[in-house]
Image (cartoon, rainbow, N blue to C red; front, side):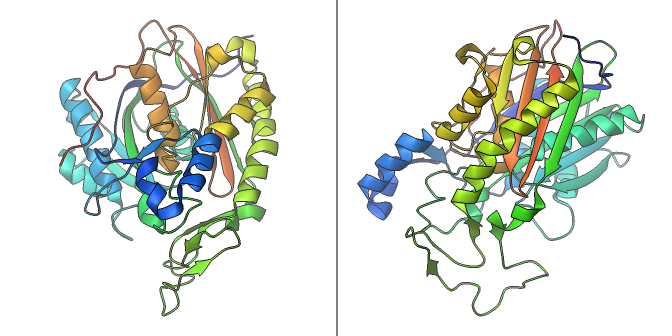
Length: 358
């Protein structure tokens, strides 16, 4: 089938970076027990994760990815109209971290800069914003940086979240498309009745940090956290992911006018392998159209689907003149699905190792 979607923009280049620090499951066994870590590995498929040092922020990872991409691929900084930074771990309350990156990258004064505060579906939402700005004629080239250091929000004693999450960043150059390849459609939504299922309760203006914010509390599963740490209702998130997400992906495909048979790859937010496997199964996605990148890096939250696409392109796992469906879901609880049509020329990538170095 041919979707009746007008194409305005396309991704022409991408790169990603991961912290050099590798945390193995065996490193966590002394903290959470070997039995717990064996169980986590079996369910999540995660054997190690990348964790940023205390003095490395999401913007540092994003800067490294963007600077390498710009230099290696010869991208002209003066032609970038806007930089969008999508994350839930910014440098400051204000100014926007995009402004910090704007200065570090040496972008022109005519280049706009703003943040998009979003969790797991951040890449889909920010790609939609970039596509809309190009469709309106406001921009021709947008630098999209998606990064998170989610581990900084997780209590080190939280046995439910520590073994699952890692840090990372990816960047993309999104340009006006003059041909028949690019972003064919984006759909998203939110079930706000579940917004508390993934939350950092204290530290914002609703609940400022107070005397009790650092008080540690253990839940019935033994996970220890405080009100200023990331909290997750695992059962609610799991139910949402398996019963709401496949339904919404199917609805998006119907709107796009495509079926699984029309797709070359289906990329899903790398929450954990068991969850992703189940969604693939419910959608009827065959093994050759699946792609994983979670085993050695963990769930990267906002950066997960962005890094997934960048790695799929780096591995030449994306076909020319084909279609890629990308779906991400989580914090909000929200979801987003995008359909990309590739051309004869795929987005440029770097063969360099994606390890971050200070």
